Length: 248
Image (cartoon, rainbow, N blue to C red):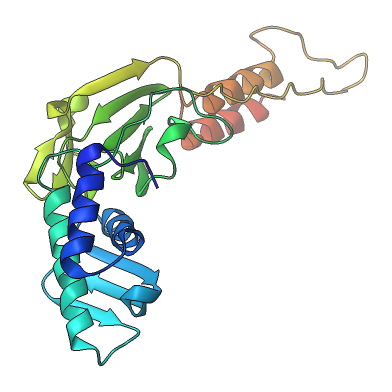
């Protein structure tokens, strides 16, 4: 789990003392509540009755199903942790921004996102544990500080630009451009895979198509590069490719 701030450490220790749990048990619950965007949690810890589930509003299930005192304590802890997450004070230390590696397009230090999605040529990743949001629009990546918002969904309304993107939080519907921008990057944070060069087609010495913009195969290869960079959609690529193949 991401390192706690001094406030986060004090909160965990204070709750552990008041409820009679170890700091490890409280940290387990904190991690589970964060993963559930502050409204639910799934966890496992021997002190908490083994496997357990909690949902805001009073629903709680524990492996030790008949221990009502334990249920009340776990519910109380989860409620306090949920309120702390939505209270606006940072519980986790945000890592420095640096390029990701492998298949990730967000900063690797942020770990795994709590939610991801895409719409049209835009994709996003939400990181509730470090209060961050990454948005990739055709290779142009913008990183946001989500403040105390517990984001449960993000979508694009009719229109264009950042002002058309909204997200849902405990405060209702909020515009994306209201969040502080950490940084923007063009092109993407990670290097895009280089498109493989297609071997020249062998039509025989008398039928080899000319090399240049009039060569359908060369144009298909260029379209493939545009598709790799996210500058055209898969439907646009397939439609144009079909037109070019008919010219061979």
